[in-house]
Length: 93
Image 1 (cartoon, rainbow, N blue to C red):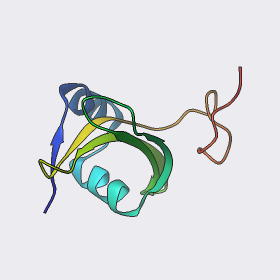
Image 2 (image 1 turned 180 degrees about the vertical axis):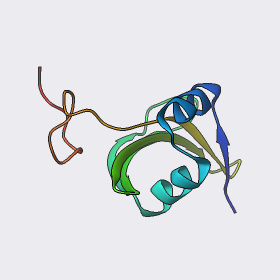
Image 3 (image 1 turned 60 degrees about the horizontal axis):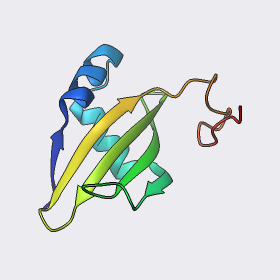
């Protein structure tokens, strides 16, 4: 079973934004992969979109399969200033 750990940045942002560990777990389990970052170091990471309690949430997390660990980097509500209505497509500048 893969365990989940949270970067300090993620914990701070989750607290500021009212996102719980339970929300993160649901988002990871049911969310839609928006973008994959296979070249991120030290581990590949992904951006996932999920609807939790009626709100859109983006979760960025990395996975170390060898260590069976998922590392939550950040979590936030995507802004319409940066994302199109589908919350999957970044606006072009």
